[in-house]
Length: 411
View 1 (cartoon, rainbow, N blue to C red):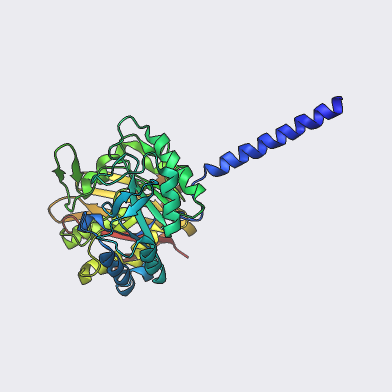
View 2 (cartoon, one colour; view 1 turned 90 degrees about the vertical axis):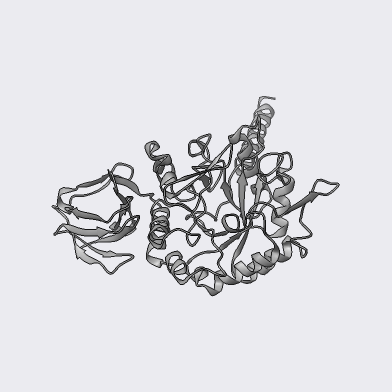
């Protein structure tokens, strides 16, 4: 009798363990995607709700033809307003007027270009533009997205009264995992509920601010909420040390980019460089079909992209914060470093940076540089600057512009 009881207890314990492991597995976010910050394009900044399958096909074509795919961009993301109504079984439908061929056919086309297709939904009853949200339909929608061949989900936070954000985003994460298709999960909660504290095991990235606006240092009011310029987003959470939460598979998202949408060349260059250094997803928001040579050259700068996609996955730290001058420092793999010198001001800024006076110490990674003991060579990633750290660095930085250097230990 005691032996039989022991066998029964062992069997029950085994079943419990299998159940627990199954529960843990079901709670995992999709692996194999999002290990590096996502690179792609999103429809909202340029097209708002004026989006259709012809535009999306043309964007996929342009991503290939412009060299962006070769530079590493892979996602073509449809934002809000693609939705039709739900059918009698509650299944979400596409707008037949704007996507007459259906989403599966569109995904097949994007995939045929060697790219991936992203889509948008919302944790509430309706999206920010009033289309059907996913509240109460999370598993149903995730299965639909998987059947369509979707590779990326941006999940917004409108119409979410009485919802707990961690619970709502966890539900959709589990639904995506249950759909058994690798789908990158982009949390768009605007940073209102400190997602960096709870989202690292839920999403591959999380927004840290409200929406971006194509300006250098402004806020644009929409009534009950505002959009923000580049510097506003850069400074919004600077006292919270958000870099401690970021790393492979979990990124602070500073929103889609506005490169090519009306700012100056210097501002576009700074915007792109800052997003890259801070390991934000690099999601373009301009019209890829008509972008200027200048915008294309900024978006496809392989040296800057390499900082964003560095295997170490360490977000840059704000090393010097001195009025118009900000210096960001980013530890890279292979013992290298990146330095970004930003002129926030409206006039030319003269910088005399004495390497040997400025010891660098990164408490997050435990890495440091004492330039009195070690020499590095450097090269500019926008302009042809070369030198080493044995002599002070002298720069003249135009208004709203940057100088970005990559440092390598001297042989």
